[in-house]
Image (cartoon, rainbow, N blue to C red):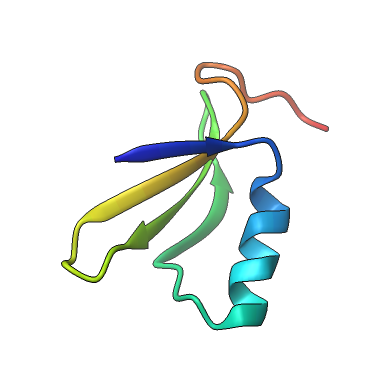
Length: 58
């Protein structure tokens, strides 16, 4: 599953503060910025920033 947010790094910081485990911290791919979580059943959940196919530097 993939979810999208406009503030990926802010969401990551909040998850770190609240103790939510992140499998792969935010990182850049050529087409998006993304982090990876696992749900309680072990399914992979990607959270990306902004529109798919657009990895615009801020």
